[in-house]
Length: 171
Image (cartoon, rainbow, N blue to C red):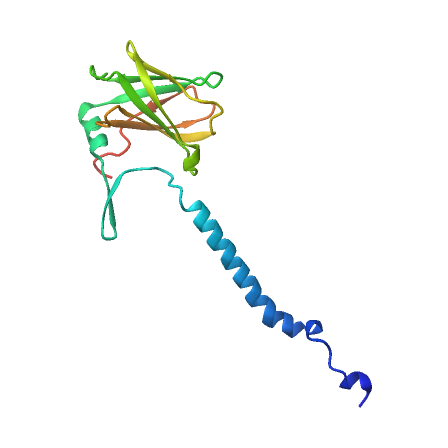
């Protein structure tokens, strides 16, 4: 036998050792990255709602939507992209409504949600939202006491959107 055949090569020069150590190392790293991503992103809810939890069942309170359906409520919302001025009209207009709550809900990041109070001015409700705004979001307009709620989807570039009860009796 020659000297080169008898000399054992170093472990890091063996391709089989890279497979034995490399595959588990890649799997552990990928698992840690996946856990970090899921913990960081998992805290945000796309649509914040109040729910009642019983065992493994979640039941959302649809009372505000049912009240809006019973009242036959509809509305329109417009936001001026240059100034952030918000204008909401509601039909039928509740006589007791002096203020409304407006929630602009970001589709994936709760930290970017915007909440403000709209004040009545004649037959309309007015307010101002801070700019800049995300490209699209869910809009919820509700009574100051939360008795009813109407909603819609606003996207950048649209002049106005229609508002209606978010959930119907069939959902």
